[in-house]
Amino acid sequence: MSAPRPAGPDEAPAVAALVDAAFAAYLPRLGRPPGPMLQDWAANVAAGEVVVVADETGALDALARIVPEPEALLLDTLAVRPDRQGRGLGRALVAVAEDEARRRGLARLRLYTNALMTENVALYTRLGFVETHRGGEPPYQRVFMEKAVPRP
Figure: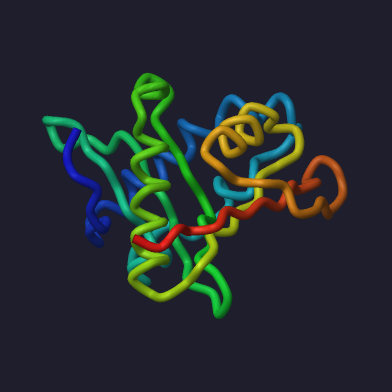
């Protein structure tokens, strides 16, 4: 695994493909594409919001879209290639987001996930996030979560 780094502009197609692969399992459950599959990943990469981890060949293994907000840092999307899940890549990218929040002087990370993505809710809970509220309508009911970012 390479160190997390910003995605390059030429990597936008690979970023979109990784998101599609990571979220494809949810298509039958939701009956439509999850929000991350509908995003403009070229624009997100161009805005400098995407951090990636690649394998030894340079193929993308995981990514996070991290968006600064006035009160917190939003972890908008966390995606890991299905064949790379369970290797700590998501945890490593959450740590990158925590470091970025500290660098910006923000005390919280925020995220939301679909309520039907129960595995994600469980993962984020294990990583220290707590549910703050729910909103939206099925199949896009969201679980909003946040995590305090400890100071060094």
